Length: 196
Image (cartoon, rainbow, N blue to C red):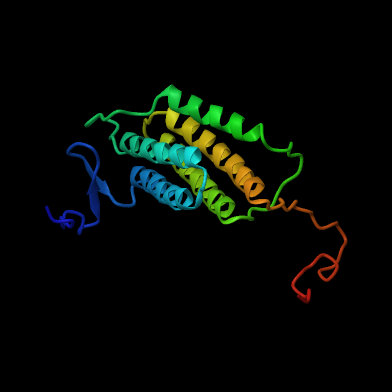
């Protein structure tokens, strides 16, 4: 079987079943964001040393394929693959609680960064939020499984906690965001004239 089919050369693609839509359709945009998120998680998994967490990330990647299939199912129906379940959200919540228990309480904003695993977790978190927004946009127009939003929302929380945990494991201190005081000039606030 050839990797290219030429069926999308006219700017359309197929949903599950016989339905074809333009490639810039909101449903395609939504599962495209989920696909990008999955790729980010693959890159994150590559740099996570903990085998239990790496296994968890692999499981999440598989679940995101189910999310994608749910988003690719047209409103009128279509091929129904195994879809997201409540237990998938509960699994993320349990993982969040377990990781968070090892961290110091957070009462300030922190700057994304730190170890490579933490940086990749932050990038994945941002893509996850974008995917969530795309699904919310889709839901304003077409019916879709609302559990997808809950799953993506919880996944972004998991990725945030994972970024903090990764920095702790790497011995990297979190950088607290310090807002510039009102009235300070650009030089005092570390603005564009600051010399490094």
